[in-house]
Image (cartoon, rainbow, N blue to C red):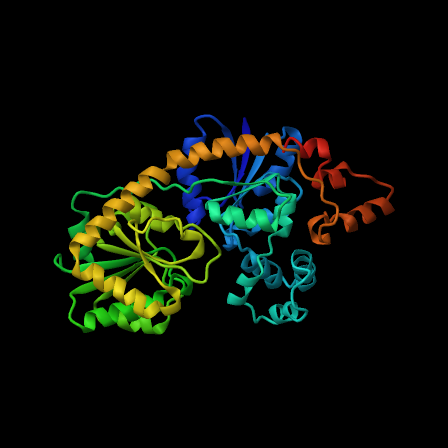
Length: 425
């Protein structure tokens, strides 16, 4: 079976890029996969016209490295794997940054016809942000996909209720166990100036406000102030850190590493005792960095989110968002005081990862869902916003037509394939 795989890929710094790079070798044992990251996507149309793939798979999320896929997913329906079940941030950024305010307005009202009248102009004026989480902007994706997959059963159930006509499946998110050298713990700590006896809390991934960096820094500072010998590693791109965190970092107990390569993550995990994997607001994502921590046999702390309620209490400590500062401090204090609790959580978390979140489990789910998606006919949707069906060749056709010429390359069929081609896409 031939698959066209739309996804960011390394060296792009993206969790989904790393996920695809890890997963694809497992799928290629039984599937032929042609990769289309942003640099190669322009080749897809002519390749597809010559020899259509059996299925197109889109790895879709909110980060800018996914924006290019929107030009293809409605014209070439396939399997859409949603890494974020809220895509408003992506659509607002992509359209408004390109000064396509009218396209944003039309797409928003198509997705959310019952939204408050004034919201669109609020967003067009540049006042969006966390408020985007209230409106998912998913309808175009959900109506044009052959099948949609997410990484969480509760998210799948919520989407089925909102989009009853769309087939939705769950694919377990998998991560490989990290590798590290035998002396990684001591060597990494020494490089950062962290004594071997100290307790090390760590955060992994891009350091954004949604990762709750500010509450983490407050709770950590309180812990140090009452006498605990602790250090905090912030492992990832810290360009969005607030100045307060940077000033504390200069005090010697908070260590901001900047971006580290995927290959080096295991070395930093080896140096950590507890991983803080918080998230709020949430786009209902499943955290790959949290799974990496479980695979490394580390005690973890997570935000108590509704879509994570099925995770057993033995696997991770939870932070109550209603009283986040106090709840986070209490969790960190427990883990600082009780090495036995750290060991219990680490063991239970590792067993949970092994049972549910290995790459082998993910690959098995993909094979099942790919077969389901391939068997479904491409949906026929006739009321999409104009910018999803416009092929932008009208001006060129008018000019060549004035010369008495008709060029096949400007045929709309090239950009909007007929149903017989779509059914094999």
